Length: 77
Image (tube, rainbow, N blue to C red):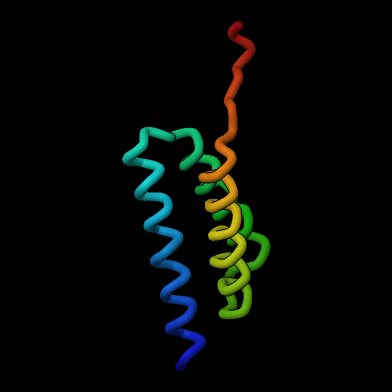
């Protein structure tokens, strides 16, 4: 039971970080977060253990991108 509460808290914290990014207008950053979440879900999903890995990996990636925002360059200088 404690494990499920811990996973729920990690999921909520991850969504809060995404909400903060959306409010700051960092749409590319959010898109990169969702891409990482999608790829990790494909690799590890469909089991409880896999989804735990996805949640925590996504949370760590999201926090990293919040601290060190990516610079998107599309060749337009």
